[in-house]
Length: 143
Image (tube, rainbow, N blue to C red; front, side, top):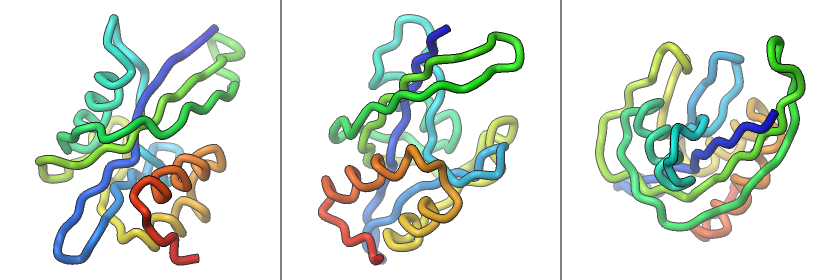
């Protein structure tokens, strides 16, 4: 069975500089907002909808970052081949508010804190996504 999802590295710039949006998911990991495609929506529509649903932040895509592929075992459907399309998304508006049925917390993190949090508490397959986002924004990872 195949599953297609999309999400993104959401960023904003304020008086403190760049900040990155991270979520604390229901599995206890720090990660990026993403989710399954619905109906006939495009990858881009999927990514923006999931960011809005999970975090209450409306964004605009600035570029595609990367696509990752992995498999996992679903208790009812067996092996799932998953494809996730990631985008770099600039936050436009919205006060952060977690979608509590799916995530425990959502927050803005400094560039260095977000990168370190991903390395220590995130999913390993997201490391490349962070690297590509930081390179695209010309951000120092602080490590």
